[in-house]
Image 1 (tube, rainbow, N blue to C red):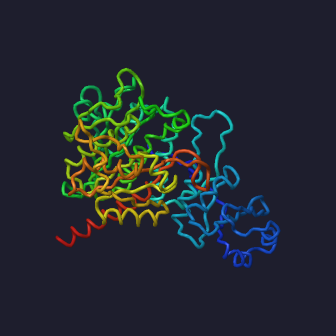
Image 2: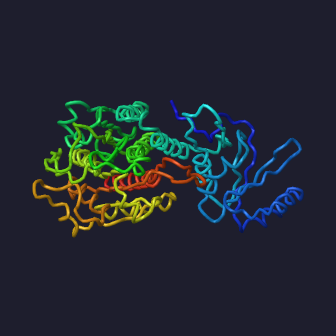
Image 3: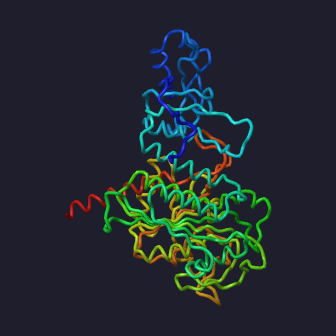
Length: 470
């Protein structure tokens, strides 16, 4: 069953024209408008500032609307439309100084609301006529909204089992093979991940999806995705202060983003093979929880000293990455709400990218700019690798030095990925602290659109190489 989008009309009923206007286009628009409408626009002082709306009346009521886009991306400019226009009306975007697909996507993302748990005061947003929403736009909007929904869902309603079920449901929709690992099998196959979840009554799980495009064979490039799905993070025995725990339902943001990305890859039937590994776990405090200074085994055979139980995400990912690497993927990507240090360095809106392959990194960064979903590359600086040395194990989960936390976390993960594999690690915030056009407060699918555009580019490059060789 296809996901519904709040900002998409269900049928092609009559739609009102919506004009997206840049500041330098106001004069030209006024010259083209009916004199009465032009007078209304002038009286309201419309200068096309971002988010400004002017409604134009007609003989039968509302006839059209103007939407100010400012000078920023049309994606964000049209993100204001669904909330600023009259509730429940259907619109069509008239051509203008912007890409039509970007405008449509912005409209749909701006219409998103997490109101499933409300029983009162639910408001239907303005909607876009379906004829203006091509498949790729619809697929991206659905993927972003899926990730947002999962991140926004309270932890009492989304534990490891529920997150695992969400992964299985996506796999079933697209005919992917699914393996669900839990119980004793989890401790054998993913020992570090199992240790993270040992303190919770809600058992940890891992779900592995395997899929390939309808036009591919066993020689098609393999994309492997690994997501941190910590459904709630107390910090364990190294307990977080209450203020830091308020948003920890979002600690499965990396899993949600990569599940959305996997859904988009399958919905677009990209010419590649796909593996998705999601570690579903809760980091709690109990007599069964891991302790600081415990030494854990990993699937890679490395022993790890627990330097801090709040550095649990890297333990979830290390087993997933090591297993994924055994399949020799062409591209291995993980995503996680991993460190506060990345936020301290880059702020909430700019996820950190770590990558051991310049071509992969440059492709992701360029795709992020093109999709208005930017990332910033930070170094895998080998000079800090010794900071993870442990006197009792092969490595520690953390460094004793209070610096470069995001780099140190990435260096930890790098120990589980062979150098021959092109690997990218994305450290995301996965949250909007306040509402902005197209980016409502709450869970956010940061880097999903960038990674999808990068994967499309990489898959296209691979196809061209194969055609040339043939």
